[in-house]
Image: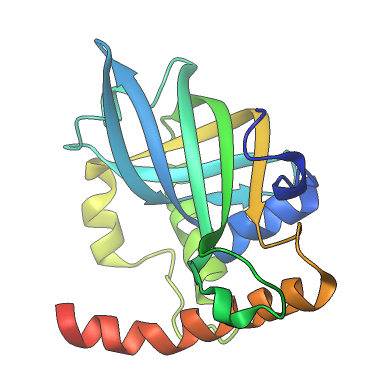
Length: 198
């Protein structure tokens, strides 16, 4: 909990919740026989009780650990990019800026098919925001046919850690320039990247 330095930590819970809501694809880490099991899953923050809700394929080897209050580590990743010294008004070295939220948790399986169905519908509604071009209907036959192959789980968060490395230790103008570069890099580079890999 001591690194990165305090000026690169943001433990304001509202800020960390905003990361979870905006970038809900989580890295979910369990340990079995001293080996990590890692899955990338969208998780939804439930405002009513502060828990995370998710679903996992029954054939995923991590599924058997998503129950019985087993421990989990979870990472949510916000925007990130290389920061060139050229963006600063003062002399600096190259660096990398990023936003991460680390959570220490326990997980419990939810066995109710009705709860699973309601959760799939509400997750879809959340992810479709703000335009809601698609609605998962309660009687959707494809969803019904797949309920036996999906496990729902509920995660209780015990410890939060926000790593917001955003050049806060620089002069005000340089911090603003680094922020602008983070926005530019994330907007401009995605098409070039996708053109190369897909």
